[in-house]
Length: 285
Ligand SMILES: C[S@@+](CC[C@H](N)C(=O)[O-])C[C@H]1O[C@@H](n2cnc3c(N)ncnc32)[C@H](O)[C@@H]1O
Image 1 (spheres, rainbow, N blue to C red):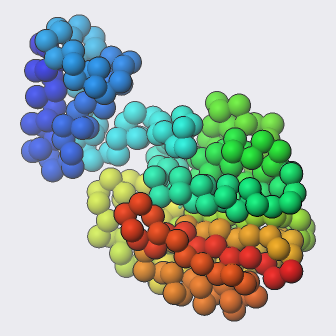
Image 2 (image 1 turned 180 degrees about the horizontal axis):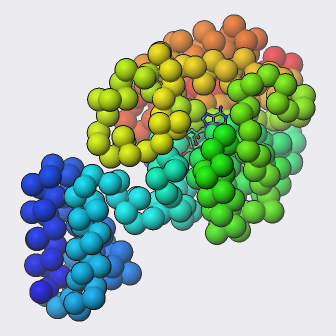
């Protein structure tokens, strides 16, 4: 069978199972099997696919057809130009979170300190901590994670991206009081779980394959945001920044939490889709 015929078969398989963007999914999987780019895979339509590659492709197609997210099937996801390994124990890095990283880099750029101390809460795959370490060559980065499996993967990803010596991963629950020393951080950053519990069941089947611990933000989605906002002042230096990824309808509530916890200059910025997504604030000097 040719590459084109396999692609056609995969598209039919996906369409029958309501997999979104069937053509793109088929092409990404074919590119993975051919170890090529997506456009290259498409351009090789008339080529006969060797049997071994054909059965590998079809195995991947069947997995994706069971609504397993593409990144879990492929085993990795690009993030801020990095290659991040993902497993079902970790959230798949999202494009919105790349914007959180960009915002943090901009905040740190204007800092007088050359070696900012950064704390990421809930590192998952490690994507944010690794991207910040890469973007801030003199920064000292700490990253916490409550899930042991996720933290192990974050360490592996740091090694894979040559940042292992720049980041200290700590397995702990930093939402609890008294978990770390005082006021040493220039930046506390987190993409916390922020989906309200009642909305979880309505998410796409792919998202439901991701760890609940990474998604569920409690009744109003703000449990983790509240805990981080309340505890961040214990870690942040005066003038340091807090940066959070938030739900698109949580901006006003998060700004209120910021001011209740004694932060100044609270601001919410939008993602590329024009939705409120990043909330930042400054620790009063
Ligand atoms: C939304 S995911 C973000 C993962 C990654 N930082 C990213 O942006 O792709 C939230 C992460 O916080 C972790 N987490 C949840 N509760 C936590 C807690 N109490 N302390 C530390 N990490 C926690 C979850 O295991 C999950 O990996």
